[in-house]
Length: 144
Image (tube, rainbow, N blue to C red):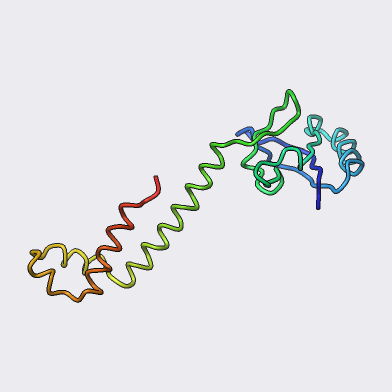
């Protein structure tokens, strides 16, 4: 497994935007030598990917989760970026689940049901009523 990475460029957001991954420190040092000779890459540096890992995630696996400190030439985990990614994933999963329920029970069917008095709703099939409750429960659990 690769263990070293070169941080070649840093984005405006302070995150890694260009990098290379190497198995050995010698390979990474050779790349740094090349980069330092190229205009715009003078600030490139090496990171021990294993040492910088957070919960088993190395910086090159998800570079947007790691902030760069150009002064110390290091990277560190950015908990806000991790939380943002987790929220995006949870929201997509939630939307997919709601879309699946919408194919089984359309919004118009649900609205028509909810417009009925409780006495009439009780006459709807149990499976239909269960879908309505399932959709209401899912909407209440929307990620924020």
